[in-house]
Length: 130
Image (tube, rainbow, N blue to C red):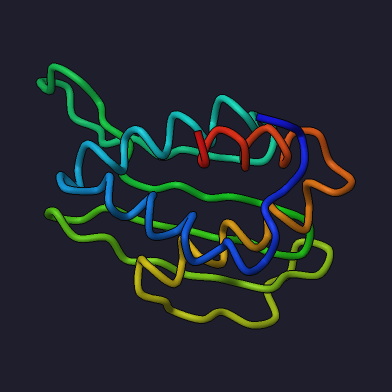
């Protein structure tokens, strides 16, 4: 695949293909967290479940800082809650709660815009599409 970003008209198909792979929300969330973290290590924070007696510590919250956009998704009891915030110099000015499909769409849009000038965002976008 080339380094070119998908055109805006293809964003719906990208989001649809991402969502089609989400038959098991818990597994999908962990895979998404891994892909984003691997491709944008400085811009993605992962919060993991705690507990001394847990065998593993799955990701429960993903926070993506992409320029002035902050996208958060949290997995709670098999359901994902999502937020999109606009921040200036680290201060959140506006926060909007979204459905997960719309959050995925915004994530792809933000990464698409960022990928034109940012190699990490371009890598993240490619990892989501492939």
